[in-house]
Image (cartoon, rainbow, N blue to C red; front, side, top):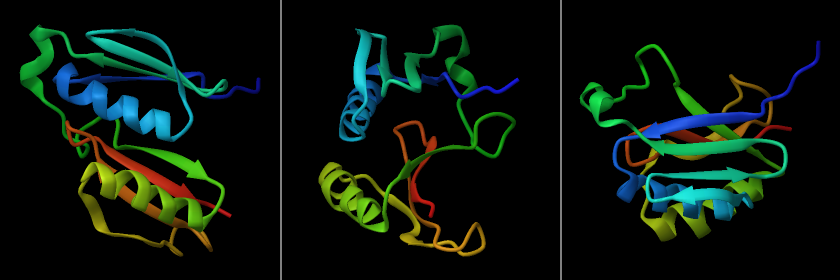
Length: 133
């Protein structure tokens, strides 16, 4: 059976901080808002949907750490190294988002020509924008 990724749900600690961040990020990456309330947004690029939803109060104290069991990071694939550079300039720097690991840079240990930038959302969920030839 062949399958593809349909959607991902990300629970966030504070919708007031995280939803505006994700709304701007997904708009830049050409995702369209398909559903929205004060506690969530749903976005789609026509192939994959993301649902960003505020964590229920009963579960907020646990927090998030990417080294624990569960999601480590999300990676978005772009068409060129220049797209990565443009994303850094037009989104990350404009939004004053901290860039991780002295990126963007090449990652030949992943694959020849792999070029990526890493950053975090307001809850410190790691996000990557990568060119993979």
